[in-house]
Length: 256
Ligand SMILES: NC(=O)c1ccc[n+]([C@@H]2O[C@H](COP(=O)([O-])OP(=O)(O)OC[C@H]3O[C@@H](n4cnc5c(N)ncnc54)[C@H](OP(=O)(O)O)[C@@H]3O)[C@@H](O)[C@H]2O)c1
Image (cartoon, rainbow, N blue to C red; front, side):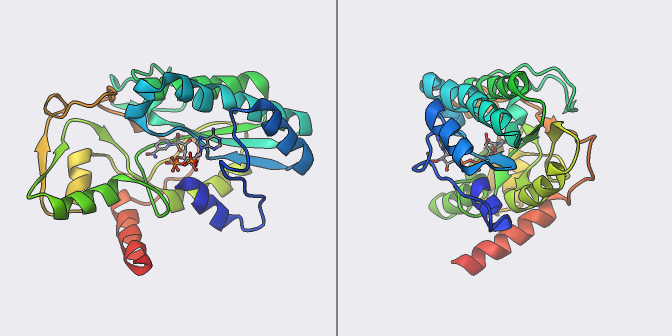
């Protein structure tokens, strides 16, 4: 989802899909970076199915945890910058808001694997930008907005949890912000659209037949943080998620 937005934004970049390079293969990653000798590597590859990560822990740790270290090694060898994406799920949600320097404490395998990825990068290179983001929606991928629109016509009411809070983020806005962050000093960034909501509030902005429920009524494999609100203290704010959602729904309609 995000990778396609980045490809649109950087038309001259060398674009590598999963079928071109499996980031779990250290040799392929190193070779690809050494042959292409990029100035900047942007890694949007990840194993993002949060519930599946609980069952497929080995894949989650390999793709999200160990592989970013291979990419960092490759970048370090050729002197390239690395931009990598991480998640609000590196936090446990016991605090309502998290700034970049807050101590992570993930409560599910996905979050633990993404935190391992961050640490493997930081251990291997200096010129990194790790962008933690949350609740992505956008063209080119499975996302909550599309799921709500699909379920809304299949069901009388769509139950959505009203006790988990976060910040929805439009991939198109995140891609543009990435361009700005490349030129900033290295480090960790918290980048989301503005505005906090529950999943139920987010759903209600998309469909008319959402109905609130609690996390206890809607059991998932992976535990989710109650509050995973990322606060950006390093760059300018992005627009409100409601404005971004309106644009996405409009663009989505044009694509159909
Ligand atoms: N989605 C969210 O709500 C969310 C929230 C916070 C942070 N993030 C982070 O934001 C970034 C982008 O997320 P996204 O939702 O755009 O992801 P996505 O749509 O799930 O895309 C992930 C891509 O990674 C590829 N991939 C998976 N395993 C790979 C491997 N071993 N080698 C090479 N490529 C591989 C996938 O290819 P295949 O499909 O062919 O496997 C897919 O193209 C990720 O780092 C994610 O952790 C996402």
